[in-house]
Length: 96
Image 1 (spheres, one colour):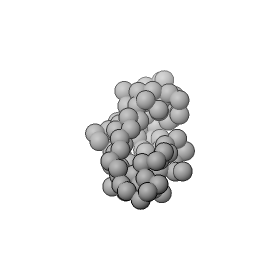
Image 2 (cartoon, one colour):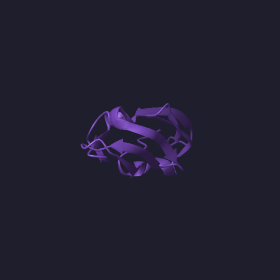
Image 3 (cartoon, helix red, strand yellow):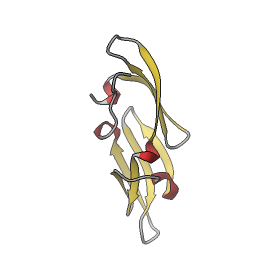
Image 4 (tube, helix red, strand yellow):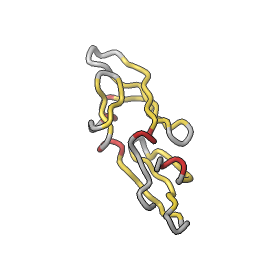
């Protein structure tokens, strides 16, 4: 299930660690963290699942709402691209 629908107090700390309280099947709330740098890469100025260390060539990293990660990502030619990705596409709540 998409994490944003079963999580609250979702934050980005400092720029690549997603933290939230995630609901368990029993209804309890567990504090959870995930390092987005282990899931997302920067491929010529665009976020891509399956890559790593996106933040090494990024600036203005921020979370908009509960599920949209935005940043300016550097392209191969050295220019910056305003990129965004829906975190619900690759982050799930697996039991809290």
